[in-house]
Amino acid sequence: MPSNVISSFTYEPERRRLVVTFVTGRIYEYDAVPADVAANFRASFSKGVYFNSHIRDQYACREIVAQRKPTPNRT
Image (tube, rainbow, N blue to C red):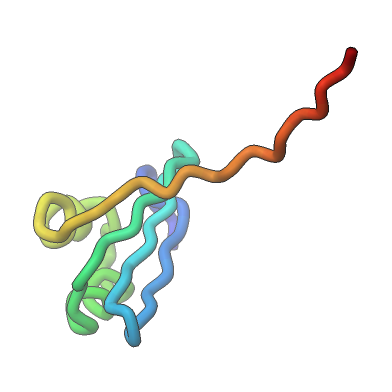
């Protein structure tokens, strides 16, 4: 799945949730994505073009921010 924009993605059909990891390292989850949209995304020749045309701005999304481990206080 080579792409200049998208590093990887997963789809959870039971939750209709698409999680997209971009080459920048940012991760977004998209809610209520139909299974056929996810399947077409997977099958598309250009992931970035399909994403911009059929997913971006079409579904509610939020950025997933990795939680940092607390740094111990040194006194």
